[in-house]
Length: 182
Image (cartoon, rainbow, N blue to C red; front, side, top):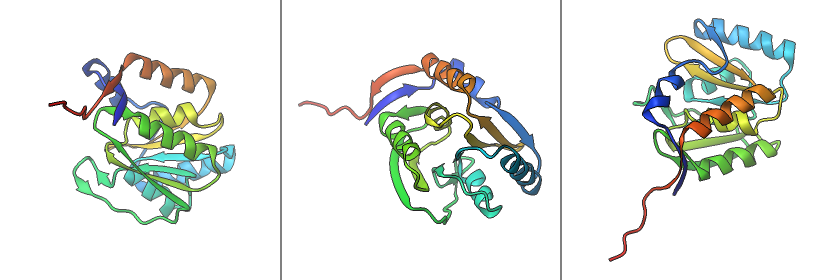
């Protein structure tokens, strides 16, 4: 598996801050505000990153074209979620990394009109950046902000540049699981 980007300790703190508009509140409050924004702005696509936010969107009849999950809640509890999808793709993406496999899966899913579910073995959080880069302008990338609410990234040229700047600050191109030669 080839890792395209690795999170550095310096950037870890920056990723705790919302990358977009933070909507604070309970499930009902955040989903009501999300529904109002969707009805008003009519985003081209909605992409959700994270198990809880993806589940909550579906529960509130807001169906993302792409969901990216790892079947975990706060990195420990298993959260299997059933959702009606046209295609399911499984990728490896270890904690603190972004793999080429995950990048390609997101890019391909966003090029199609199918409702796609990407299930990540590892961690999905950093894949928000990839979703912003490959999503069309005027799309929403939505993820959960633990113990606060949800974050909506309105995809614009500016948010794409900001996502790319985060990637550029990460440690690029390393190989994991190199085969040993005896």
